[in-house]
Image (cartoon, rainbow over all chains, first blue to last red; front, side, top):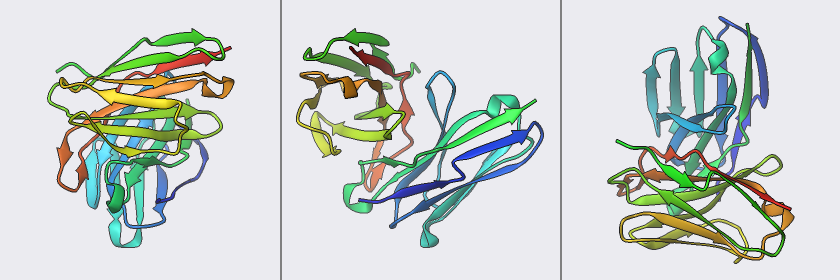
Length: 110
Length: 115
């Protein structure tokens, strides 16, 4: 099955800073998504982005499917952005078997 | 639209017991996936159901099983509980497209503690 690598594993920033989170896939990936998990464990879908670029407020994501990676950009970070960010996707042969990366733990200091 | 609901939210069991967790998807969503989240192993795919059929299964022992009903509600069962089964169990629902799934929406999870 596909392997999903996320970097960096941990990131500590001051409020107002910008950040870039990266996700690499071992093979062509289907259903690529980014999630944010808050301290209470709730996973919130940020982007469904198998290719191209999308923006939602201070967050944007870009997926380069041919090079098997995706990037999540967070601008002007706020303390509420803290939590763990996951990317996930599936291989084309098992399209509904979604594999998650190990996550990037983001801490925003006031 | 109501979100994905999971019951119960918290559960304490002892080794050897069995447990059944329930998930109600967003109305109109026919795909339900289950995940186990632990500090050591992260988020791991358990299985996915669509139209009452299991389409994919992760690398878990046969003690983990599930089913889906005609109204798309799903249950997962873990028999002969082990200490290592203590985890957050998450359920997600989504619409289905030809080449896979659409955006997944997660429930709040069930926290299972096995003593």
